[in-house]
Length: 312
Ligand SMILES: [Ca+2]
Image 1: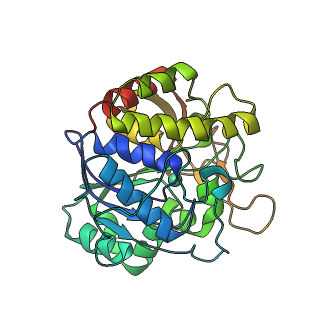
Image 2 (image 1 turned 90 degrees about the horizontal axis):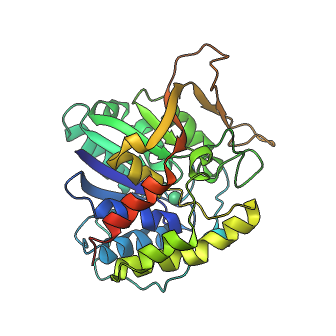
């Protein structure tokens, strides 16, 4: 059982990750969602996070809006992949339930300070700006954290926003630096694994065939989202990046990784936002990340489909 806060920038794959997580209340006690600018600007990621709660039949989950820009760098977005509204393939609307009052960073500081020691898991599906700001304001919050599970980084696979960088780290490498050295146990699901867990016509058809609204939404998102990734990377299916974080929380045995030393490059230049993942221990530095390099693709889609089936 995880007491869970999800920090997110929806984002087509974020929406799927959120529906997946909200369908597992017996394993994931979701306390709140915190939003950050990333795939699209903050107002849209905050609306899309509330839409995910509405679609999951969990509209009372509080959604706190957080940082509207990275710590230092110029903001970048990924509307070319996620569409101008941040979700491909489905119509969006203004959700009935408004944002929770207050800033996401204040919520994180308040909640983590009040939490029992090592009790809260933070799933991070976007740039890590909110946690970096919270750590800067209140370094003592690490006490309340059990684990950070991040969709972030790329090593064996190469990047997706530049030849070397994965989007979340390219969007705010300075935030990632602060998070990587905070001392809380970290698991990272990089492109190395997300590009091995790919859609197929059959996998999407099973989701659509569930016959519920959530299954249709997930299938519509994937039908629109997958082909552009397949074309760009010449892959046989599309990845569902952030949803691997939910799957990892629910069933870590689906994944294989190694505890290694990881740093992020925040210097201007071709390596900006690149993760240096010391897979072979060449630097002989202490491991700070459980780096996931492989996963069971069919097991992932079985688990996702089984959970989406439970939703309205
Ligand atoms: Ca995301």
